[in-house]
Length: 392
Image (cartoon, rainbow, N blue to C red):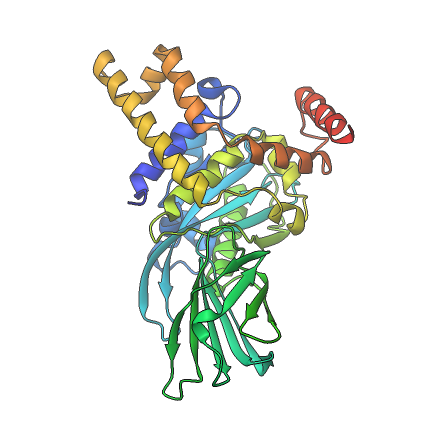
């Protein structure tokens, strides 16, 4: 089963307490998080934009983060889960899906960017005239997560079930076939894995010359709306009791081509994994990361399904440790348990702090985009070490 909203909130806050340097003693975590329902409440009551919706969540940031709130120097990112209603081409309801809007460098004078991290991406391209190969013509290609749907017309001698789709150097065969009455045209449904990126080239082998199909991903209208609402919210938040000047909004919004979920119910785990990745970085690193190009950000080792499967096992183990500690100590207050039991703290931190490949790759990007104004001496020393390592 997926993480529900309250369990997601619990593990994100546990990660905020355990993963960053300073742990429980840090004033604020580098990644702010106002709860899984923040965006829904922001839009509540038919709010026309984020500035109007701000009234619905006016005191959330100050209440949870204290003076300075989201614009404190200690905060470099703002993680916002978004619960989207999926609909088909006819507008019919297809269920709910969680994805993450991660706002980087939203403070005073920063180059702000919002990253749309979606583990169930949808994209579609039609080809007019049809793309043709030796024995097949293709009129459209659609992706939904790890699923690809190809609309084709082939010759009478070809077996559609022998078709192969190549994505990123990986081959996917044995498609499900839905043939129209003519038996020469229909749809091929390919099941891929988490590593098959959504955008870029998809090469269809159908006998004869392969057909190269290019799929370009674009932000959906809903994703653009989320970006605009968050921009309006942050602008209004700046105009509150704080003396910070109004910001200029987001410099860019980016839909990153991240690995996709292989199941229908892991979107909450992907959100948690994204947040845990960013919690390894300092606030200065997060501000610097906002200056990176879309290509640099897309090239980071984002979590894939195998990482989610591993995380599930570790979360179960962590809950077991907490239950035993709660029985031994006679309290269910997690903060008390963590402060009074150093061994428990270290065990849980190890279970949530294991994605160092992302952290190290992100820091190599950060070195190329330093935030000289906000970086501490420790940050500068660490970056010099990383730079020296790369040159060896």
